[in-house]
Each structure stands twice: as C-alpha cells, then as structure tokens.
Amino acid sequence: MNNEHLLNDTGERMIPTGDGEVSFVFARHRFAYQYARQFVEGKSVIDLGCGTGYGCKMLAESAAFVQGIDHDARAIDFCRKNYPASNIRYAQMDAASLSLDRRFDVAVSFQVIEHLSAPGTFIDQIKNIVEPGGTIIISTPNVRTPTKASNANPFHYSEMNYQQFEHLLSTKFRSFNLHGVGYAAPNRLRVVMQSLPFYRHVGRLFKRTSSIKKIAGAALDMTNFRVMTTDIARDAIDLLAICRNE
Image 1 (cartoon, rainbow, N blue to C red):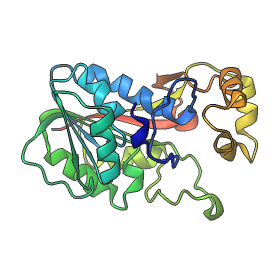
Image 2: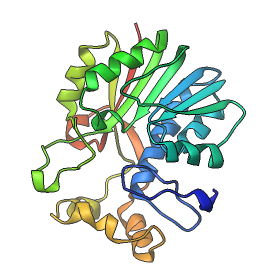
Image 3: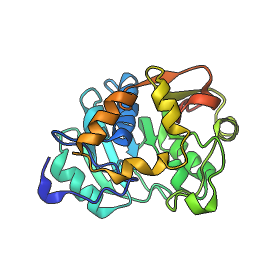
C-alpha cells in the first residue's frame, strides 16, 4: 500500500490493515467481500460505495470486470493508486444518484445503505443498473435496539434490525435470502465484554499496532467470522442479503 496516499481512519471508511496491524471492523468488512467472490466469477460487477478499493481488487481476481464508485474524490484517488488492475475502473459518483451507461451482472454494496436517507430509492437505482436475473448483494449492521441519541452514529441515517431490513427487501424483491454475519465460534469472554456499557468505545482507544489490541483480538476471537442462517435477528453483527433482480 502506498502510505503517501493514506486516508484518515474515521471508523466508517475502511482503511486496510498493514503489516503488524489489526482492525476488528476491517476484518468483518473484508469477510463480506470474501463471501461475495463466489457470485462474481467471469461476470461484470459494480461495487457501490467502494471506499478504499480493497474489495474491488478482491472481486477482480475472479470477475471479468469491476466498476468501483464512491462519492469521495480522495477515496477514489486512493483506490487508483493502491488497488489498480486492468479489469477495474474507479469513478467518483454519488451512490444515491447513479448515472451509468451500462448494466452489470452483479452489484455489491456493503455497509452503505445505512448512510442514506432513502434506502428504498437506493435499491431501486441498483435494480436499474443490474441485468434482469442478476444478483444484488447488500450488507448493513444489525442494529437490534435503537441507539440512544447520545451514542448515535452521526454517519448513519437508516439503521435497521432484521425485521426492518427484511420488510424493505420484501417490497423490492420477489426472491432473496437474508443471512447474517457472526463470529465464527462462541466465546464466553467476548459475550461478557460486549455486555459492558463502555465496550463500543474500547476499540477506538487503541491503535491498530497496539499489543493490547492484538492480545484482546486473539483472546476474544474478534477477526474470524461465518455466514449465519439461523438466529440471525438475535445474534448477527451484520445483515447480508443476496437478492435476485427479477
């Protein structure tokens, strides 16, 4: 990675980890792209809200072509300098107002829809740029209980729980599967830690190179994940929808 073009790690824009670094959130985001690779082999793909471009590079290893778009010009510049490939094209564009001259076989949009004030309109726009019969994959945090105003995420406008996201999808697709992303294995210490009121803020207190963060990540098993098909509403960290564009 070209350190000259690093962006600030806001906790929302995912900066890939370097050697000797650990990020629990980045590991989770990367997992979604790993899972999506099975749907893109030999196909044209658009990544809506591609961020720093690491996901486009992962998808491009098996896809025929990947188009990455993001509203942030600096992020697109980062993508081009750090994750170029002959079958990837990056463009600055607002995901909430798409203007494209082609359709794609697959669309992915990970951790984007909660940032938009009109999620239903966003899905309609995605459907318009995906071929009939194509695949649309969307992820969003599973916000099981509404966040209190004092702890609200200032970047999020449309947080949803399982039932809310399922209802939204049911109004847009006749065929979809709603899965969850959860930790790969149970961990009692992790459950205890997550019940503490200050838990949500602990990760931001330590740098990615922190030895404490590395030890905690290993002890709590915070970087290994699985796709869930049961107990999603209760236990999933993220919601992951695989939709058919009919």
